Image (cartoon, rainbow, N blue to C red; front, side):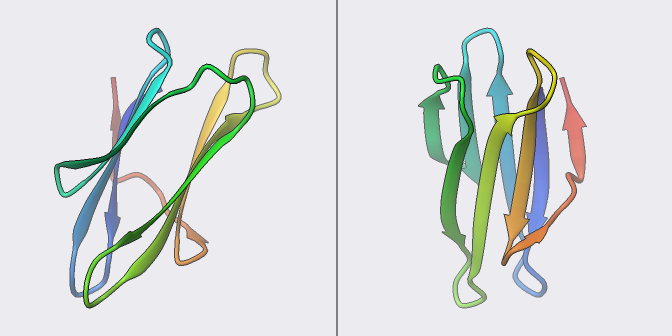
Length: 92
């Protein structure tokens, strides 16, 4: 899947980066360049992370890395305040 970056916030902007490595089976989440989550993804099911981003303009962020209908597919979903957001960059 690689690395995807999302913008969080209206007036107070933050950068949320989700980096997944299929070979090493890890997920790393950074907010403004600071690591907040670095975990293994060895379980076959979905993995969900919840965090608060920003102050005083606080946002509830949910990152879900789950299975798709395809055998080896994984789907990344990011919600900010309950609304889905699109990656501003995706690569690797």
